[in-house]
Amino acid sequence: MKANDTIVALSTVPGAAAIAVIRLSGENAIALAQQAFDSRFGKKLVEQDTHRVLLGDFYQNHTLIDEVLVSVFKTPNSYTGEDVVEISCHGSVYVQQQVLQTLQDLGARLAEPGEFTLRAFLNKKMDLAQAEAVADLIASESEAAHHIAVQHLRGGISNSLGVLRERLLEFASLIELELDFSEEDVAFADRKQLNKLVKQIHDTLKKLLDSFATGNAIKNGIPVALVGKPNAGKSSLLNALLDEEKAIVSALEGTTRDSIEDTLTIGGIQYRFIDTAGLRQTDDTVEAIGVRRTHEKMESASIILYVVDPKQQTPAETAAALKAIHRENVTLLLVINKMDLMQKKQLSEYKKELKMLETEQLVYTTEVISTHDHTDIERLKTHFSGQLQWNTGNALISNQRHWGALQAAMQSINEVAQGIAANRSSDLLAIDIRQSLYELGTITGEVTTDDILGNIFANFCIGK
Image 1 (cartoon, rainbow, N blue to C red):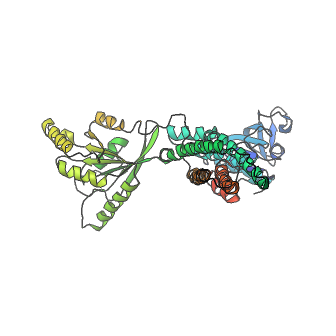
Image 2 (spheres, helix red, strand yellow):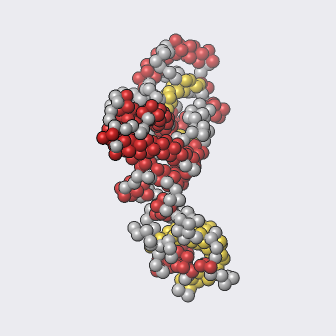
Image 3 (cartoon, helix red, strand yellow):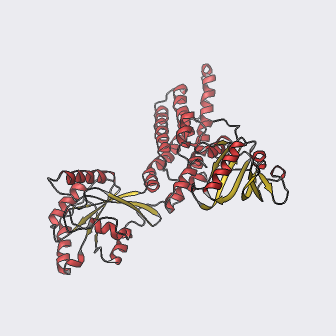
């Protein structure tokens, strides 16, 4: 990549559409676009003020390609901080190809993935955490994921860390000053104030780290495993939740031999429902593989729906099964299915016996449903609404890279706290403070390497 190149890319989704937008950025973007553009009103792009739109014709050599709108954004008031031109043309695949090819023939280079946003970062239009939020915003598929991405784009995590990093930097400077005057045995940095600041940073980092489980689940979709014995009604429940015939339903046991997944948004959060093979001992090699995969899905699930047919499974068997699959930090929901096939008295006795088998160590909630009853299914969905508190105004960590940097920063901050308590020398404290500053700086981009930037922006789409 050369930073002074003029780059070009299709910024809308590839393929036929009503319109397409092709973006140019670089010091020659406006002059280059002018060579292929003829304004209907005789106005030149180079003569326009920033943020102006002109109607005209786009030519390849002397051949008319399309009637277009050309938007001009002049440095520094653009997305990338450079001169930017956006050409809105009709969405014919042929037109898109000809416009792109013409601009490349005139000297533009096809942009690398994320290069527009990379230039925005390098030109200080946004920090690194905000740049990553751009990709998250594009990929967001639910209200909650969108909320987190917008929050980070607006500088949510950057603001949370920026003030603390600035104050820590002040203390680092004072400690460095102490090292310059080490022979005079002068203390410039108040250890009590430093200890207070370290505690504040520790508390902030802990809140951010604790939010990762929620943020990451929201970003990637919360995995919900539907488990239970064969013919308990797991596939029917999945179909009812999704309101489509996603899974095969049969009276034969062992119909589901592999996991089936689909997503559903409830209460602004995306859930990944996973229908699994029935839990039982089997001599069937293929079904046994499915049962093994069921256990693997349970290990990675945040919520487990244990589905029971009360006519085929006693309360004691159900309680034993719940104990076997119960894990810490996993929400366990018992779904007693096929209530339409039971008398109220039988159902009441079943629930009563099950209640007697409960223990303090085993925490779960119970829903009694029929997959044929729409009201029951809607009531079941309410269990998922509000599972996570995401719209609190506090920054949530959803990025694995940020989480790793915060973990490292927390370790260094703990070393600083221990150093103060042990009355360690200024040079030892300075090492741990510098490391904390380094780790925090990698999140927002004050500290970067080519490897970090390469990994981040490689995941962007070409036109962003």
